[in-house]
Each structure stands twice: as structure tokens, then as C-alpha cells.
Image (cartoon, one colour):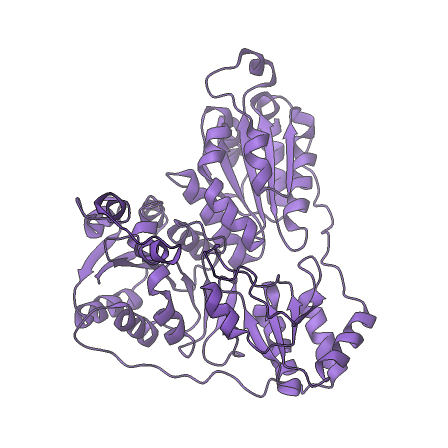
Length: 514
């Protein structure tokens, strides 16, 4: 057994079953170990931003780490934007990054770089392994760090000679770290605050927005009338008919201020106070009302689900939420194809328990409003704001949940960042339907240009936000990467194409001309 084989065997023994990768020379012994050790599914991606985004989508749905396999510092650097998104989502990921052999580093070969420096800003744990005999134990430590509450990115940098030199054995799984339990005294204190008559909101994140956590929040709402909220880009939320209703905080800062106006106390459950996405002249950055008291029921590293359940018991809340979202399908529109008619068709035709890997951007408001009363679903948004995540996120989600339909509503500008993900969808025959909103523009930036106070917009400025000349043809792009594709120009065309995609399995792309 060499170091690479001991590393891969440790991953398998610790419950890791998927590796998203784009390896190079330094990782060839790790690639060979995928044959020597059974149980780790390799998924090739054509760009490292797809690798890291797919690992994020997998981790959000599976609730456990995938591993990425990346080539030296430049390979890691190519994946940093989606690792930023994953860090904001608190997704568990283990990056395995190859490095030159220890004795080769002294020569400063062409691909030598500061891998630790690249890794540190997006990682909760970084370690360099330079001995094959330590590869297994360091891998177990990396997995422990990634699984530590609330979830994080662990980056293990493995020297090439640590991969090919002899090793002894795989390492056993280490105990999970956290989540910590909120003490009973804090629960009792917050229970008293919730019945003090003040206008109260509860801001949920993490597992408070899914499963038992969401049910407990619904019980608390039934007892107290507390307003249940989630962040604009809450990383993982269960929504739709039959679920407890949660209000999503708006995007723009002044909208958030108005949305929260009059709130006297806000209870945080794995969340942070809402702030404006960007700074703007003469607009607020801090969006919490001036006299609103912030109260922490559970910090991100604490067990928010148990805290919510214990709070419900302390309040004497009913055993079930009394108000659930009622199914309200919009019907099929006709005529013009726009963001609203697309949203209505998606809501009408998507089956139960679909997963939305959502980077719809300027089209998101009608989509989210329509989906709120559609069939039950899971919503995965752009958690860190760095565009180009939707397609890779869909790849990872589809691999984590092969029995569920994955829908990826995506702006054309952001999709251009990681269009290589379509090839992986085709190669792995993933059940993903991608809807490209083809407005031929970085449309959100046209809004932002005016919001930051720019008044004179000339030809050069407009050219930086425009995606014409030449226009991307998404039917040809997808077809060239192996994905069946079509174009819709009317609501009727889109409905027919989308219904067909929902009735079959496998990757599809619809270019919606809006």
C-alpha cells in the first residue's frame, strides 16, 4: 500500500463515496488508487470551478463531504470562487491538492506556487502532508475538520512522494466535533422573551430550514405568532406545499429595512444579522432596526434543531405546526415568454420533491414568489454571491440525490462561467433540466450601475454589461457538450419543452429567449 492508496481507503472507510476531480501529473498515484481501492466514485469535471461547485451541491444535499481532487496551486485557484460560495454555505468539503515531491520544491519548477496561501481564505483547516506514513491519519483529520459543526472546507495538500512512497494502513474515522448543545438556561430565558409582547422575528439558517428544525420552528410560530424569516440566499431550504411557511428577506438593503421595520427583537438561529449585499451612496448597510434587540438562540456551531425543539417544549407549543403552505399552482400561461411566465410554467409542471439549483438572478423574484406555493421542493441558491455556481451545484445535487429531479434556472451570463458542467451532466447522465434565461446581458449590473450613483452611461460602459456581438447560442453550446437542447420563444413552446424534460430522465437544456 502506498500513501495514495492509504488516503483513498481512509476516505472510503470514513463514509466518503464521491470524488469530483480534475487531476494532473502530481495526482497520478491518487488517480491509480481509485482502481486499487473500491468504493469511491470518480466524477471528472472539465474545470476546477465545476469540481468545487459540484462538491458544494453534493454536500448540501447529502449532508456529508465529497472530496475534490485538484492539481497544484493553479488548479485550486481555478476553484476558489465556488469554494467561497461553499464556505458561505458551511458545506462540508475535503480538498485533496497535489504538490510537487518534497525534494523537487527546491528547484522552483514552473508550477510551484503558494498552495497554502491560495487555500487559507476559503478553508477552515489547511495541512501539508509530506510523508506517506502520515497520509491516512491526516486524511482522517481533514474529514473530521470538514464535518465539524456547522461544516467547513478542509484542504489537504499531498506531496507527490507522499503519494507514491510506502504507507502502512488506512486510518479510522475520528469523532465528529459538535454541534454543541444550547444550555437549558438560555432556552428558558428566550422562552420568556418570546411572550413579552414585543414584535418578534426569528431568522433561521442551516438545519433550522429543513426537516425537524423547520417543523419545530412551525410549532413555535403556532404558539407565539413569531415571524419566521430566512436569509435572501439561505443555502438549503425546504419550501412549497405542506411545509412551514418562511418569509425570505429581500435582496436590496432599503427593501430589507422596510421589511424589518417595527421589529423589536430578532432571534437568531444559526444566522447572522441581515446587511446590505453591497454598499451604496446614501443607503443603509446595516439593515436591522435601530432599537431591535438581537438574541441568539443558537450560533452556527450549535445544534439549532435541538434548540428549536427544546424552545417549543419550553413554550408549551402544539405538537404540530398549525399553518402550512397550501398548494396553489398558477396554471399554464400563453403568449409572451418572460421571467413570470417561465416561473409559472416551472411551478405548474415540476414534480414533487425537486431540487432547484438556482442562479436565476434578475428572474429570481417571480420564480421564488411562484414556487413558494408550488409543490414541495428543496432550494439551493447562490450562497456566497459569486456567480457561475448554478450548473456545478446542479451536478453535485443530482449525484447526491439520483432519484430526484434537479432543475437549474440560470442567467446566461453566470452560466457562461462554468458551462463545462454540461459535459459532466452528459457523461454521468444526470437528471438535470437547465433553463437558461437568455437576455444577452449581465442584467443585474444594469440595475447596480444606477444604484451606485452612476448617471452618465456611455458606449464603453454599456459594452461591459452586454452579451451581444456575438450572441452565445446555448442550444449549440449544450449540444456540443453532449446535452439535448432546445430553444423557446413563446410560453407555449417553453411549456411543451419543459413538460417533455420533466417526463424523461437525463440532462436537458432549454434556452428561454426573454
